[in-house]
Length: 258
Image (spheres, rainbow, N blue to C red):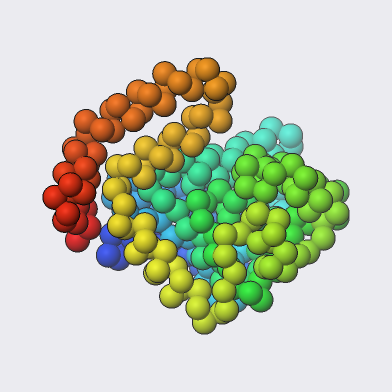
């Protein structure tokens, strides 16, 4: 179905795996195109959780060197259009309706770090290294920067993107890029545990929560009053809102918990 990624839905969980292990899952225009397609299919399938991970020893080394060689000779307009595709891909991950998890199975650099920052949860193996090394090449992490800023904050982002230094998983945890760091053999077990935790909650409420967090960032405290009041009013009368409250008072599990 795909050349550069794997796509699988199992137990209502969508697994997307970067699948170029021979070059550390570096991405090019084809992988970006296939990720767009996979996410579009995922939205139609409406899974409970989306998991993004990598095949082999690395999560993603960032841009493919051969792709970078081609881009070096692109015109401004070609570079602009090429970058837009990555920008929209990150936005699709960030706005994916279901909860998203990055299971970071190894090193991540440049754009690979951007993929992690666009997800809701990021769990990494302890041996992984991370870096925004663009400045060492005379470049900048421009397209991924909005998601890095949201994830890490200005101070931490400046420290990593201005120095271009590589950091350990434990350091990336302190910088705010990661939620957890685990031993190599615990990564997918911890992923399954988090998936189980997420499946206990209302799918509709989770989708509304994600939209709520995105929207309130753009509002003043005063403007947030009518918006947030409407959100809670609508969800209280929604099908899942009613089911959740009834289940609570009747001391039973809600129907979405199979």
